[in-house]
Length: 137
Image (cartoon, helix red, strand yellow):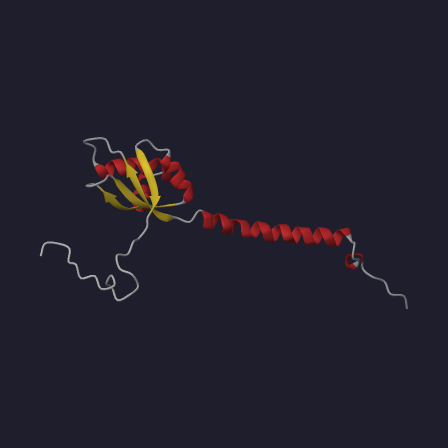
């Protein structure tokens, strides 16, 4: 009996190569939205603004953020805190694209990622034997 082999199983079959390349392209396209979603993940940023004198801080903050997010309600939902005393600004959850757009808005001085600093190290909560007391005692 003569063995016949399928054209798909031949090592240099163009059909097999095309099938492989199509599957690889589909896998790459499926992974791309996940990468874009990770790049667009929102993080908390502090936005420092130059608020006009006499303007209500919260209203100015929302007017600054609304064009970036598309609506006043989305701006209200994104803002976590309004800074009104020592500095004027607000904290909000923003994607990298929103941060770049917000930097272009009039009155925005700086947009920085929020960071948490701890006063004590991982030891017992003291600064290695420091006994100096700060405050009014």
